[in-house]
Length: 429
Ligand SMILES: *Cc1c(COP(=O)(O)O)cnc(C)c1O
Image 1 (cartoon, protein in one colour):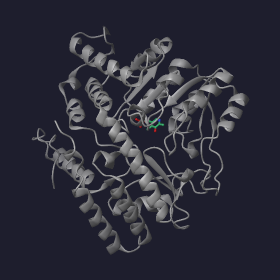
Image 2: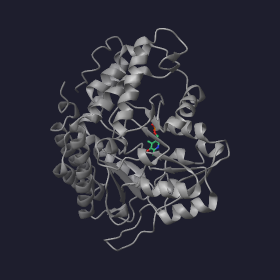
Image 3: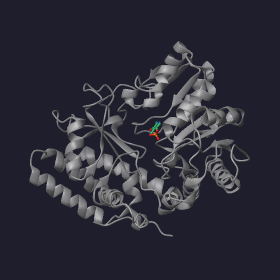
């Protein structure tokens, strides 16, 4: 079993050292196809493991509650400057500990409790923070939702795309104070201009939740929502390939309210080590190589979708324009649920997640869909050919799911493939 080069300092804790080695082994010998995951660079990980973890810095640069923040102020300012430059925004807040925190802070900053928010249906791609009954968001604010168009058998117009007529209808009917664009399980480009038009029609604020596609936007592979949105919130660890965390961009007029909502509204001391790592990732995302990376992500998911279709799977919305493919398993095998598929693939060394698909007849715990993403394995250097191979391996494992020897064979093939694509071999100092 190998170990990551970052574990060598943990010399006095055998238990944690062993677990880190096991996780390194898992990440480098099995396929990481969770659409929200990636491999952060060694530079990002080094900043995350830096002395900045020692520092308390409640407040913002130049306005801290504790002393000793001269260097930390520069770190956070650097992160903010890099981020506003990357997306062309007025103001950045880089303190949210996660994407969920960022979203709640936005609602808290710009809305009153009980205000209406129009967001995407959770069972059609929306996120928990878009008003799930289980989320605090639905207890504080009144969520109404829009969905996708019905599925059609016309290959030129397969449907299952955001239904802008429905967005407008719902906006006119409910007069939301805020419209949320953005999704967690949606494989198509999201057009910020259409959302802006509807927001203007009803006098609503527009928040773009670009958690999944922030990296694709930074790389120029997806349209930038910043010019169209009042606020853009996102995670830094998905396609953007930074440390685990969140960030918010907004127009100057909302800067103060957003900052107040993050601290002291939501959080205490910021994670300055994570903020330094965010700064590193924002620089990485501004380099020309990052656009090459995001173009490859999209090319890989298109190849992946085509190969999956060739194996008999149906892709929701007929394909993909981003880093993910949402697979409807029913046409491949009517008996196969998302839950079982995820479990079988796990045994075969292919890490995915079950996901509801539009109009899913099964419960969110069982599902008829599977979500797969290409961001992580693209970082590891995989191209279209490897994703075609992965589609074949997935189909092979799922067809022979009751045959343990066949699953082991797939697992061995997966390990052989992964051995040629160590994610940390592609990064250079
Ligand atoms: C992932 C995601 C979030 C939440 O991010 P966490 O860091 O997991 O809290 C919010 N919105 C969308 C659309 C997401 O995909």
